Length: 332
Image 1: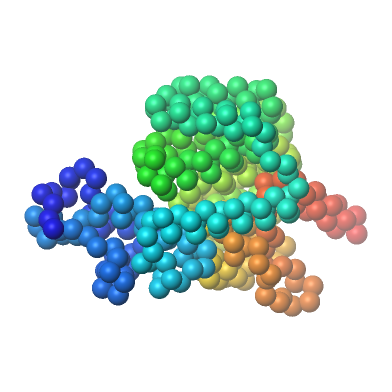
Image 2: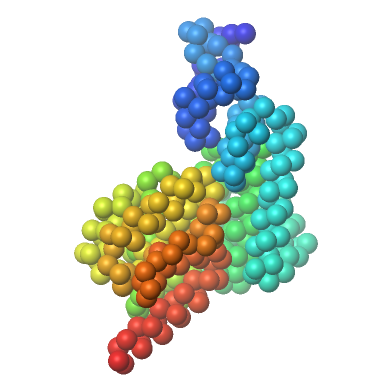
């Protein structure tokens, strides 16, 4: 089977699939030989071309592998089977997070509002969505905007993209709108108060290009009066260490999504801990399950490698703990 051109609508070159899913070209070729999937067509030049259905299956496969499933278990599954496993996984995570946080389920009215906003997004009404979010921020405050609207909306948008019901450009549009609303709220907070310790440096490690969760965390930190130093995303470890030294940061806050390799995440956190001064804390949050597993033993009195921030609400407790320790040290 051949397609006429790599530009044919509904078809994707192997480089596009690699960027979309994070699965390398070599991995895609190995799976093709070993499992019979994906099974690309060929364009007029003989280059591999993948249709939308295969792309969506590969997105689900990547999520399940990140969650701990082996390729031999999931690569050959049908889309219906993959969706079933993925749905079960999401339900388990939601139930687990809910039992730990004690936060009640969102009311039906909230669900209806989120669905309306999804419709506004699909119509590419950037002004309408921005106004809706800004209105909630004005009525409920920044923290409730994030926890009651942005966080569940992120899930809906991500799932719609995963299932092919939302285009990549629509996901990008959503991210830009949410970021603009939150940054405007941050600017207003910065004008209203002078920042206090701790000084928190925020970034992600190389390979983690998603910064929305990091911005959400920064909003909670600024509301606690913290001095934040946002570096953006994908900062190499040596640059983080240099930035801490030059800025006098007390804490390094890192964000991780579920797409990050768990072993690489833990290894990077160990390396960063070794390079930073012992008094500088590392806070790690996001959707990577490896962050919330028990940490390896450390020398007595050395403290943990990092402090996990499983919920945005944990930031308030972290700031209070740090300030209490700082006050005790100053009084000693």
